[in-house]
Image (cartoon, rainbow, N blue to C red; front, side, top):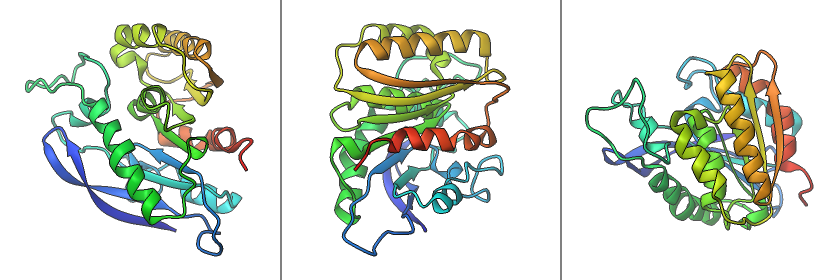
Amino acid sequence: MVKVLKMDFPGVNGWEKRKTYIYLPKSYGKSDKRYPVLYMFDGHNVFFDSHATYGKSWGLKQYLDKKRIDLLVVAVECNHGHDNERMYEYCPFPFVSSFQSDRGYEPCADTTLDWYANVLKPYVDKHYQTNPDREHTFLGGSSMGGLMASYGLVLYNDIYSKAMAMSPAYYVCKNYSYDFYKNLGPLLPSEMYTDYGTNDIKPKASIRLFHQVNRFLERRNVAITERVILNGDHSEANWEKQLPIAISALMYNLD
């Protein structure tokens, strides 16, 4: 089942209510079992087509139910503002794009990730049967959410041990991304599933940067499961197709 809560979130326009989707596996509540947790971005696109921005979700509930995977998923909707607020809430670095706001928001990824780590996670651990340790705590997302999953794994490496980063948008702030990952210090042993499609956004340059970032992370103690998806594009339908491998990578070798 999926519960939908509204939680206070520190958006770029001030505190506001955000839908927070909490998926509970079929076995939940039938014993005292405690579950690993995957925290995700763009939560409205994760479970239900009727809630998804473009009418197609990842179908994650159906996949996890069908495979009876014992994973709790917490996914928070993004900012739907017309002033490109989502980009700012999900971007770690200064960037320029065709959507650049006249208001000049500062990149707010650090604020978003601080809320995930220090407000959302404690709430979930308090109210649900989670296994709260690092080994069982993950981040996941696609596009800007994929960038956030990768960046969050580094920034809060003491909290998250694994990430799932589909079509990570390193290209949005490519020079900053390159320098940040190149100059990382050592990390705790970590893992990341990540992919990029050959029909995705700016595929030639983006796949080159994708490989570079992955090599930088490997040098800093992150085991990478890396895939270039032939004909993969920038869509929920494509990311849904990758779930069997991505979820298997997250769940691999857990108790």
